[in-house]
Length: 633
Image (cartoon, rainbow, N blue to C red; front, side, top):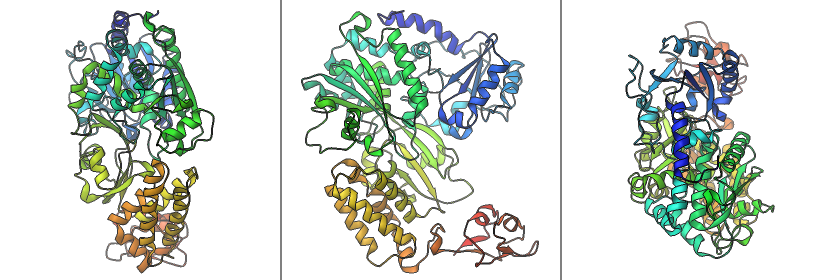
């Protein structure tokens, strides 16, 4: 079927909408993004298919990630007239029993994470709710009321975890491609750009440049224009773009199509990390399906508009996340940045006017076009509109992906959504913006999260990575880790970045080894300032951020390393040792049994001690002690 108008989409939507919300029999959705598969979802999915091979009565389906990675594998089960229930930690040995209990109307409350109130997309306000007359299960919480989800607003991730990413029909059932056909058939390019401008959408890839202004600037330059999607997500701990591509690839394709209509482009390129094989696979499937339906290719929907998309896989170079380096790599050249006095919207890929946005930016576009600029601009802050997806990792109870309105506080993200720091440890800092971001201390936890506010405290929004750190994190070692990463990933083209990172790493390593000198802190600040002023690209100018913010907010730790030759957090092995507090030790012998060197001695129910000659500072005793008797000196 070649789609010619929105009416064709509506026919498909009605057919597959029933399968999504009111299926015949039981529908089992297994979360099959990379996080779910890593937790055992593939084995559970295969086991369910083996138990229900014909799909009659019980349909075993795949879906993307709904964000709560800590609870994977996640399985959603629904049926007409029954509650829609999400189960967590459904491994291979549990999935058949879970399905059977749902069939029998029995609900194991320990296995259930919640029952869904309304699974519809934020775009489907007028769609009949098939769950309206379903009687909820007593004693089981509503999924959307879970603290992890209650503050979230899904826009970019509106379909992730709710549709089969390999099904264009299920995407259309949630109003997919309606925005594109409306833009193509009923709007002028300038009108589309004005909607994006009015929405206040800013690039979600790190720079935060206003999307509408970028589109307008690219559109005014003559030549064969290119639409490029940056899916080269290289920040440690970040996986926002990967999850969108794995869970809802069509939203990105539709966003690129709308941009192509607005700018006047016939060629699109997606530059994706080669380390994302599942994302690449699902993108290829989505492109093929869109071509089969006539939504990609020549003369789309009977118009004179044609658009083709190609995928290029990068080799994993962090610097290729920078726009000019990415375009050089896309051309088959070495991925190195260039000076920005000639902007890519004027001369970018193959010297053509080129518009580059990242995955999350494009995923927002169809929603904005359907709901309107004022709807999107109504969320967020004065200068940072809409929502933002963050990956919440590190020393945090609830790891996962969260999408929240701009302006939410760091405290709400870390302690309400994330559940705080585990094991009763004390929060120390949160690092935002990837390896070039800054470390934000506890006193700024009430800071609203937007582009301006993060910049004011020395951090950046970046693509959305958030790494939470607790009392056991050495901030000097954190700075050393990120500088080491950036040194390896620097293209080496300009002296300030290449030599600056090398010198910074040498100084930080010396400090962590207990060989720090007076003046090292000031030298780090001087080198960092030089890099910020004179590096060629944005990656070089932001590279000193981890060092400068840790010096700014945790200078006492640097001084302890240099002057006292101590690491207060017990990370730098040359600068600390473990002791057992006799007042706190109960003689439970847990540390005695776990010590690999037999360095701990003491009688049962009496205070123990550590032989410093035998201790290798592995930290096992510190981790297993339930009474905080093992201390760092």
